[in-house]
Each structure stands twice: as structure tokens, then as C-alpha cells.
Image (cartoon, rainbow, N blue to C red; front, side):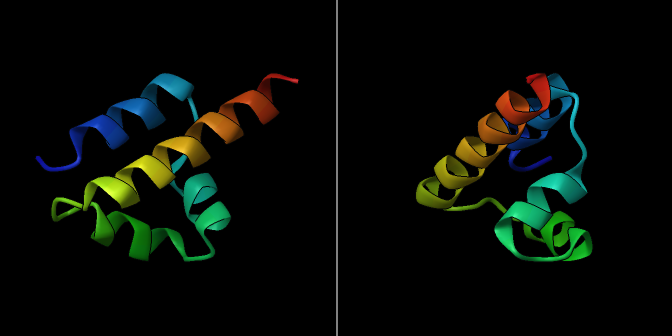
Length: 60
């Protein structure tokens, strides 16, 4: 499986893939397909920041 860090971060944050996709401005199907191949580190970092942002927002 590729992009394990992203998948694990989503699971640990207890959020859904569609929430991340929405913040990225894409649909959830495209986001899932994007995760099939290893992403560049810069894109992984951006996605992990989005996950943290959603996690913090949901905690309020």
C-alpha cells in the first residue's frame, strides 16, 4: 500500500477521506485514486497539514 502515512493520519484523526478531498478542492474519488501511487513529499506535507487543520477544527 502506498501513502501509508496519509492513510494512517486520516484514520488516527477519525476523519473521512471526503473531508480532506473537500479541503483540497477535489472529489473524494479523485483523492482516493491519487493515493494509489506514491505522492511527492511536498504534496504529502500539504495533505498532512490539511488533516491536522480538520482535526483541530473538529475538536472545537
